[in-house]
View 1: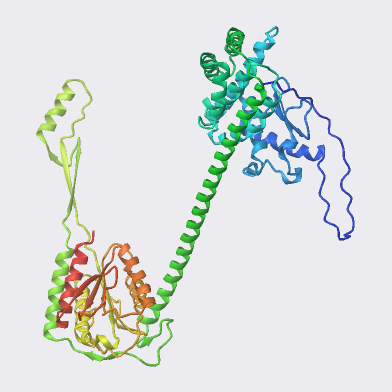
View 2: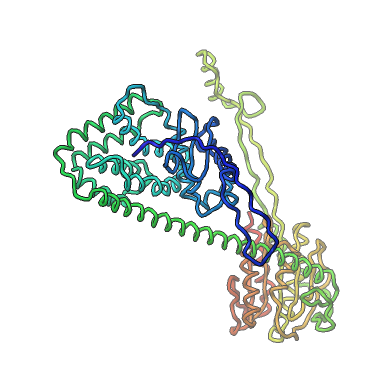
Length: 595
């Protein structure tokens, strides 16, 4: 590979485009001028600091270079020369290298720039005066893959750009070689297979060049050359002696093997074809990787969008649930789902005094809840070298022995036990009872159960709360989430039509905080679940949210024809009178499972 030479360019002043009155023609496009590329070069220089770790370099960018190479680095001048034509078809006003990420719009040009930055960072050694030009040329050939491998160690994410730059840098050197015969094949091996061994190209991509070079050079010579460039990859940036020694080994290996190796006819064409196959495979791999990245990014964006929509929907649902709970529990009548008072359809028929059996059941449930909520005291034992605490004689003797031996005493003979009471969890029980016409048999037992549970919860813990909502098309609060024990039983009838379980669950969830941990939480749904598909879907969504949050959901049914709401624990009660006992047991289990 030839050494690139750069000649510092002198900017020429071009006249700006004249501003013409609109004559209906397409708008004029700004022309590219050396002065316009000065800004691009300055911004490339700013980015070069991060790429190379050096702040003493100048980047010149203009269409065409005096050296004829796409780009080159001149150590003596501290300059990187860059051909602006690499940015084609972009114009200078469209290029903003100072913006991180803008390089993705011109990956080939940026790859060449990264390659020169690797030279600036790692091509520190300089050729001594009087060195053999052929040996220096061989060392510079080995330097191409060495600097890219060294650059990947500190900036592995630049691999994609270096793969792209290989197509721009290697193909011209293969098509217009400075070496002929066996030396040309060896140079192709160093440029392609050397990049393979530092991780720029993949082994499968370089198979065409590897097979051709093995056929032309022979297995022994290719193995020798591979060992030379592999050793050069480990050379330090400042080690001129070692790099020139590798260059000398390269020349000696070619001189020793070349006379015995025939040069195939049309070698340049064969090498160009093999390198083109390598570059096509690399381009296909990069395109597939880019497509996979785009697909992953699109999938992530879709997932993020879906999550944002879900969060928005949940927030909207919480606001609606708060409004529903406020209207249901603060109104003495029946309300519509939107919170407005319903002119008719109130299922409440009155109130009555609790029976002796109901009072006894409430007392028993209160004791059961108190027993289920009890938590043993926790004990924490600590040791210390000084009181207070119980003295452990074995540890005291060990401490005395340590002190007598002249070592630092580590034994701690005093043990202190700290006992703490565990707080008892409160109870949250929400009851949603279907008051459509098919649920008339459940009215009396559910009214009794609602009073028993509310009474027992209030007697157990002042922080415990329960609430009951009757629902058909409308919502009616039978008991409200207060800390006071209800004095009378609210009676109701089931004569409604349609169902509105989803809004009933929202109101109970918001009013009792059924989704918040820290309490024994239970939702009881008394229904036969003969709903439409939309009503069922909305109810199941709410049930799933509650069960995911750790709230137990129980569905009580009274007839064998009842349907099961997915996500709930189904309990069939042939005798409606057993509903209070079933609800009491479920509430006890809920508070017992609380941790």
